[in-house]
Amino acid sequence: MRMSRMFSKTLREAPNGADSKGYEYLLRAGYIRQMGAGIFSLLPLGFRATQKIETIIREEMDRIGAEELLMPVVNPADIWKETGRYYSIDKEMGRFKDRNNRDMVLAMTHEEAVTDLARNLIDSYKRLPLLVYHIQTKWRDDPRPRAGLIRVREFTMLDSYTFDKDYEGLQKQYAAHYKAYFRIYSRCALPCVAVAADTGMMGGKVSHEYMYLSPIGEDTIILCPECGYTANRQVAKMKKEYFKEAEKPIEKVETPEAKTIEALAEFLKIDPRKTAKCVFMVGTFINDKNGEEEDKLVVALVRGDLEVEESKLSNAIKANALRPARPEEIEAHSMVPGFASPIGATGDFITVIDDTVAESNNLVAGANEAGYHYLNTNFGRDYTGLVADIASARDGALCPHCGKPLKASKGVEIGNIFQLGTRYSEAMNATYQDEEGKQIPVVMGSYGIGVGRLLACLAEEYNDEGGLKLPISVAPYQVHLVSLVKDTAIAESIYEDLTKAGIEVLYDDRKETAGVKFADADLIGAPIRITLGNRSLKEGKVEVKLRSSGEETSYLISDLADEIKNEIAKEMAKIEANIVEKELED
View 1 (cartoon, rainbow, N blue to C red):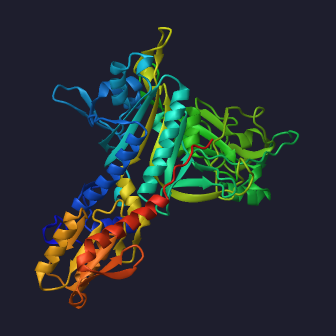
View 2 (cartoon, helix red, strand yellow):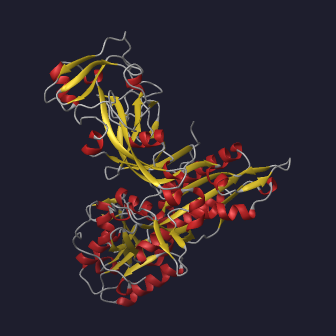
View 3 (cartoon, rainbow, N blue to C red):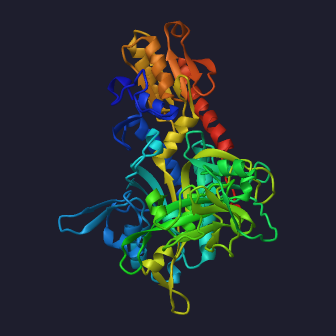
């Protein structure tokens, strides 16, 4: 491709709103352009890079026996109503009516669509197992798009789906995906870890996320450097302490201005671990009778030195959404913000108690009177509720497996896999006839990778002060040819010879200064740069520089095609040598 004809241009400075280095360079190098909040066009460079990622994905999916299909992005809302997700998913789902006034949906994922296909195509155990995938546009009206392609509203995603007659079959296909995803990321040269994760809106019982560890990530990953335990903080566990002792009589004491745990512990001269902290949320639930949303106050109690993990709390009470409660919503139940507890509260609300509170005795809690707290409160005697693990794991807490200190790290989710089980097949009556003639729900799995987000993470991982330096497996062009000589015929001949040899070449044929051409070459980040200059030309040579290492050499023009093929092969071999095919861990 000649740069003089390329449908793109480079930028000398980062546009406003470029909130990460990778995003800045994708913009400046001319890979992407923003059309609206969370909506981007892939320019030719960006499109070529994502095509290469998609090729790797297809090859690895085909490797585990998958068939590719294509499902529509526009779905009839009826299939989403069958599973209940039409009602449980909030404003992120794009909804509209067609010209016949029928409810329609812009698919944010395709579980409903593929289950609709399955119930019409799978009739017998003889047709199982099955595995299909597609690479399709998705729409999620995210309220907080950020960091370019990291968090967007329209995106392209691989999603694959497995169908089995039992959970043993699902486990095998799940394990195959687990390994295939590590191969995909390894072939793209993107480092990642797999962590246990919350199933979220997808449902099911088991889920893993693939995380690219980076400070720009919004997810917090809890890791144990000693034994390898990893989990998203949403589901991460930690070793907990319980303070068991003989119950003491409850006692009301004055605690003026002690509205926080810190102030309370300081005033009473106690450890925060001897207190019970109230966190107030409002949960949104679906009424089983009429399918309508209804809100209810949720009172969550954790030990004073801990924090509530909202995902754990939401899962414990099966809420569709949670938001912080307003003061008047708390006061309506005879509880006083800053001095609150379930003791003496009135009305209909949900109480959830972390096990650190339920299994400890004589904790200090609010007396529901401004300026007062209770000493020696005890679960079961003074208040009741649902007991669950709702505490957030944190840096420095002890590993639940080996007891060593945990570490917290930020990460970007680049893929996820779910054991859906019969969540969708039961709701949509997707069954098969077993050997005894009984109709059994198909056992399903769901698996996804965001293509654009993967490119964005590669841009974050591979850059320097000059611009991008993408791995050769995903770079839009393998070679950037820079000509600094007036005689264009020689450069044209080199370009044609390399192209005929099957080498992907971006040829800078523009009438620009050497400084501009070199700056743009670094910004775009092709793995190999060939420079045709007057000095080397006199010797019948060109200069070759590797973008990743800065290593420079020179080759005879007559040998150039073969030498560049060798360089490409060496760069690919580096990636192949580091391919990870990790087994699914317990």
